[in-house]
Image 1 (cartoon, rainbow, N blue to C red):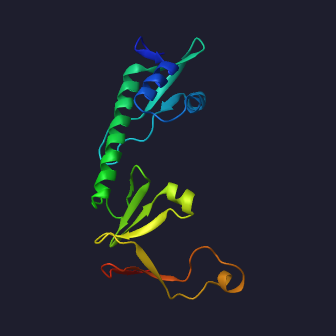
Image 2: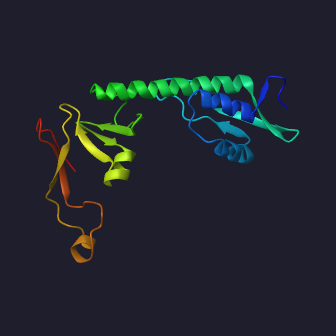
Image 3: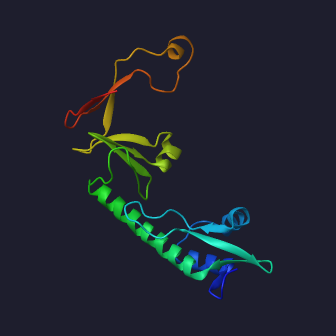
Length: 182
């Protein structure tokens, strides 16, 4: 059982909302019932931090969380949001973070660097335009075009499109002529 340093789940949620939290209270309640903890969200990508999951306990029919652990988790999620904002600003300034094949999260989605291009994924663009993934040149930041010199796969040849873009043979940047064969 928790000592005197505990707060009710609804009070903790109120503090979470004041700090800009986005998850609904119903998801907190469902998680507490199933896992006996509350998860405030992802932590930082490029720095070690506090856990963002806080243990919960039911006392006399009400759920409570440890106040010290909750405060630390709340601070960690604020630092993670600030880091996300910073990463997004750096991206707009054409500065890429992370190593090869690391998925770097941003405020608009994520990107993965693989030299000389990086893949940018925006889920909102996918929702509106049907495709949220785009390859961009790391040097000149121009969108990549695809060369199609591979033969069609068996399915495309005989039935219907496979949906894998199987004829694609290379990615080319028209701005600086960088090229990667696929």
